[in-house]
Structures are given as structure tokens and as C-alpha cells.
Picture 1 (cartoon, one colour):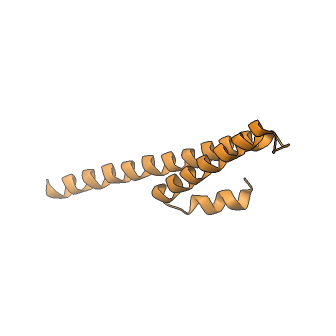
Picture 2 (tube, rainbow, N blue to C red; picture 1 turned 180 degrees about the horizontal axis):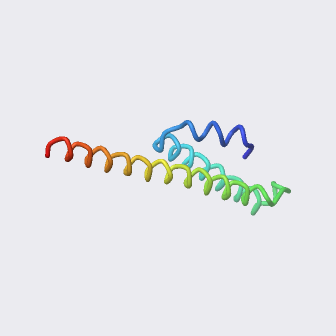
Length: 83
């Protein structure tokens, strides 16, 4: 995954990232089958897919954490206003 692609992924939502992960998993499985059948000569393809999936899942988790922290801050602010 190139830097530009990674930057583009940062602008997406967690749901969109999880959809991309599902697509990548399907592609990774297809690549794995090609390797096992001997059609694919580049054996690093499967490893590259796994690393891309890990990066995307990390981004999705970061977005989830940030979102939950923002909600907590909003709740605390509302509590202070009501008090």
C-alpha cells in the first residue's frame, strides 16, 4: 500500500474501512488459492494483503476509539451545563 492510498483511507469512515477489509480478505483468499495451485509465482502477494488488512483495521479501530472519546467528552460537557 502506497502512502497516497493510506492517506485516502484516513479520510474514510470506520464503516467504509470495514467494507474495504472484507474486499481485501476476499482478494487475499483468491491470491492464496492461486499460490497453492501454482498459478501465482509471487509468493509475497498473500503477505502484502495481510499487512494491508492489518493497516486498515488499525485505522478503523483508531476511528472507533476517537469517536467514543468524543462522545464521552460531549456527555461530560452536557452534565456540567445541567449542573
